[in-house]
Image (cartoon, rainbow, N blue to C red; front, top):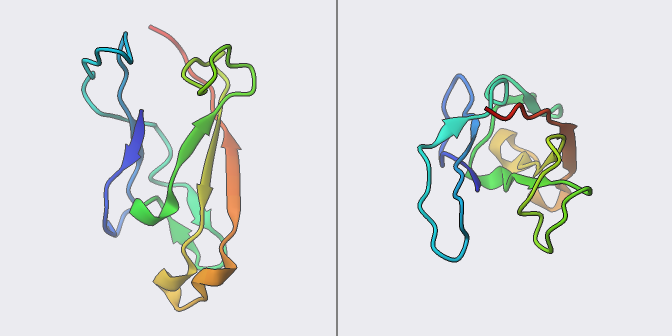
Length: 106
């Protein structure tokens, strides 16, 4: 599961993840930030750095063997939407961006 903190952190909020061995009976790991996401320019129109609750981040892996993208090959893509209202723009003009991630399993 991925999530971000709601609100605006002046330095930018990171996207964080938690894992579980079973979706049927979840026992979540500690929340861990995805390195580099707090510094990412998430909307070049602002420019806006980092994430907040309005970005709706999602991880999708087209190589996932599951029906709900619950598995990853280690190279998923992080998708998010923009929120132009945070810098005086029109929220009806939202964009969707993506960036390739690389996961190292430990």
